[in-house]
Length: 155
Image (cartoon, rainbow, N blue to C red; front, side, top):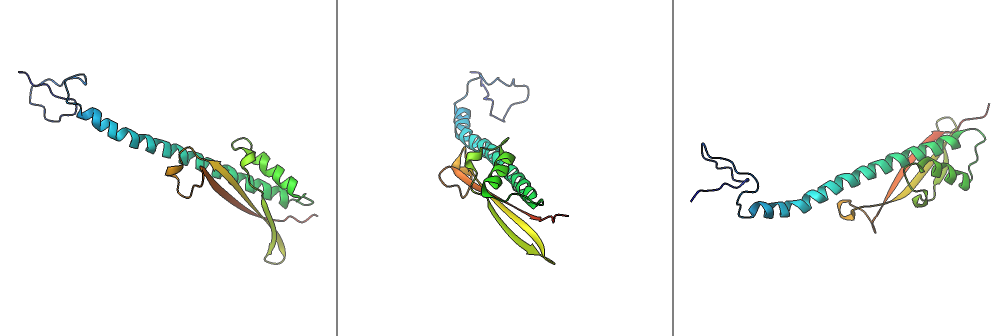
């Protein structure tokens, strides 16, 4: 009887033909594939999920800087509706504005009386797979971004 080598066997005699995947195998390669496929799928979705998280963080950070920049201008309207409008417009191309939390704006000073504007934005990012992200609550991850700008004085 002629011995048929499986595609996963590494012992091939000199001069023996290597059979295709359709050769006679005992099924252990299919079982190994069935064990590794879920792990590879979770790894793939985890990489995709962290890409979405990074994108959301960078977009939220940009929105915080845009909001602080607008508020740092002389005679800027610092009402809560204007702050929310500026932040929503800054995240609109990439993120859903309905998941944006209420912006926190505080005024401070540093050095020799220079006024500062601190903006904090938070966003509830919906997750694809909750189990690959630590600190995720009810399929959302809260991302926060801060920006501090110096208040421009009118000339």
